Amino acid sequence: MSTPDPGAPDPTDPDPSGARDPALCEGTGPDRSAARIVVVGDIVTDVLAVLAGSVSPGSDTSADIRVTGGGQAANTAAWLAWRGCPVTLVGAVGTDDAGTSRLAELTALGVRCAVRRYPDVPTGTVIVLAGQGERTMVTQRGANLRLIPEQVEAALGEGADASHLHLSGYTLLDAASREAGRHALAVARGRGLTTSVDAASAEPLRRVGAAGFLAWVRDADLLLANADEAAVLAGPGSPPSQARALTGMIRHVVVKDGAAGAVWAERGGELLSVPARRVPVRDVTGAGDAFAAGLLAAWAAGAAAAEALDRATALGAAAVGILGARPSVGTVG
Image (cartoon, rainbow, N blue to C red; front, side, top):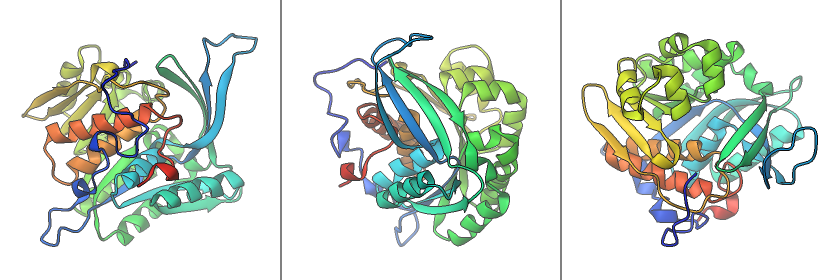
């Protein structure tokens, strides 16, 4: 857990540490038009319980409970939109009230939703138990398992201004949606987009195996993993050694190590480390998704690794200062 720093900026402020900087979303072409990022993956309802203490098995535990929008891909898309970046989210929800609410929230933040709705399956739901700088998730993926390759291809075909595709690893970790995830990476590369993948979650990675997952994401331009996920994919070791080892499969690798900061490794090139920003922590849910958004907004626009990491840590710091995984409409502007 990060420790409070009295001199640190308030992460609930609409512009923490200058995090909201639309200029970093500009493309590099002669017209300097904004480059769109396409995000593929889960949209869920988070039932967030911020625990007052340790869970008491078989009894009651006090908590602050609220229902919010969630899902790794949806969260990253929301933070990108908050940053002022054009972003399209490709996913699936039910025709239930939850699906309607999740899409309304994302649209209000400025996310373009290339989302299919299914009447025979519910919108995904995650119960999040948050406390003491950590969170545990109980997941029903629901409609997210209905993501299909044709949907991804259609969204990319309509996104003539797209420059980058970001894939939530959850899409690859379930057999039902895996083909869509793999197709997304292949089609994006074929269209000349750069690609990134978030490794998603350590336990599902263990179930599918490191070798399989790395084969599916091989030759992506960027992989993001936290320390637990990096340990599954690269084996035991320090974040720098794990990041360097993974560049054998992926060109650039970022390993997030919580309060210890993050490491960037480039295949055959630089190895960078940055500290985490010391800010008061309210809820770590979605902090990694915000970190990804900050990183992608800068890096996909041509920023160097050091600047991209700086922007990532700024947005991650903003995320841990609020309850829930996303900025609200009231936060924008």
